[in-house]
Amino acid sequence: MKNIVLTVSYDGTNYHGFQKQNNATTVQELLEGAIFEITGEKSAIIGCSRTDAGVHAEEYVCNFHTNTKIPADKIPFALNTVLPDDISCMSGRVAEEDFHARFSAKSKIYEYRIWTAPHKHALSARFSWHYPQKVNVSAMKKAAMAFIGEKDFAGFMSTGGQQKTTVKEIYDLKVSKTGDMIKIKIHANGYLYNMVRIIAGTLVYVGNGKIDKNEIEEIIASKDRKRAGITAPPEGLMLKKVFY
Amino acid sequence: MKNIVLTVSYDGTNYHGFQKQNNATTVQELLEGAIFEITGEKSAIIGCSRTDAGVHAEEYVCNFHTNTKIPADKIPFALNTVLPDDISCMSGRVAEEDFHARFSAKSKIYEYRIWTAPHKHALSARFSWHYPQKVNVSAMKKAAMAFIGEKDFAGFMSTGGQQKTTVKEIYDLKVSKTGDMIKIKIHANGYLYNMVRIIAGTLVYVGNGKIDKNEIEEIIASKDRKRAGITAPPEGLMLKKVFY
Image (cartoon, rainbow over all chains, first blue to last red; front, side, top):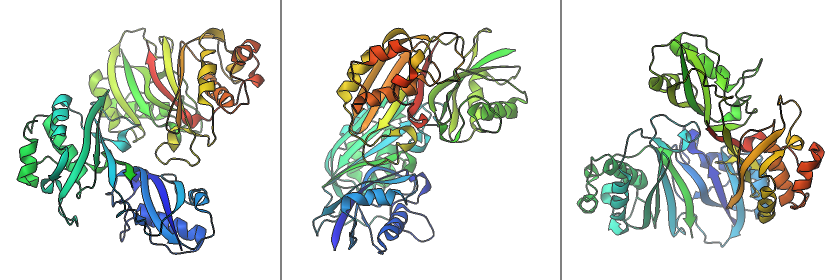
């Protein structure tokens, strides 16, 4: 059997995340259905991360095992004839036998987008959190720096995650603003359940003054979920890139 | 009566352009319907340009006359409760009596986006032309410069336009590439029917070698539509900004 790696982009608005669930449409379910349609084989796709309902992916990575004779680089053409418009396969290649989209991942980049104008923008509403308030971006930039490094992020996790450790290393965390759009870009070796959305919500609380920009280190050290900010909504979150 | 100016963003995928038509849903029709719903008045909206079916707008400008008591800056809030998700009103203000969204416009910026990767990308497919071929971007950049200036663009017009003159001034025309996405950004004092899409199609023909990069001046001077490239499809086109 060949181990095939695919990169996939999707607009998560209409899906209950990547991972298969009962009674809810997910990206994995549609991908497995498309693979069945083109190969005639039932496959179990391994995804690089769960991603929540409503979250998007610019370059999601997943793998599956198959006996199909379709060459790996032709699989995207075949899948895209079957997949809906909001999911597309961008590349396919044969990987080493032990490649595992989740366990082999070394790090991931996520981006969280916040639209701060008074009114929503039709072109970015699907891909950003509409937060129509003045926020202090330079305070957010300052606060962002306190997250960088190897730390115990137990306070930045929703219940329901299945993690062996709550220690993760954030390599980089940048806040930028162009016009009315704020972007938070984060690169880490791993993420706890809802970690990016809680960091985004915490940085917004720094931006609106509910949390002091110098308080972040203390909040992290407290490991107390209640001291961090809210869990920002899913539509602002995008998986950008996975490194292996 | 007050003369109200609105800025509006829309994803044009599901619309037959801005301007009202029989038997086809347009942005103008939905906007006028929303204005009727909030003011009880039948209004005729004046748009800054027609924009074709499938074309998008980041900041479209339009105006209408009304006796409504709703303050101009509250109108967007009211309209957005009625408008569908792919159209949103971003600002409202009272303008001088003689302001006219089309005739008062001094210049406009459009952007045309071309996605050159082998497979479509779920997140940009609605907003770009999928052209899965290698193109020579530096030849396109060179060719773009030949368009700049006040010229007779009669060869870069589809039939069906109602223009008094085919002479327009292009202030700037820039080709850039980030990853697999090529962007053509154009700023001109006015546009002939389909002019941006024909310029985009011509530049792509330069990129794939069907037109020589040094031939553009001659093609413009010929005023011959057949010597220019194809009319690029509407989904890649975005109205970015209107100047008054």
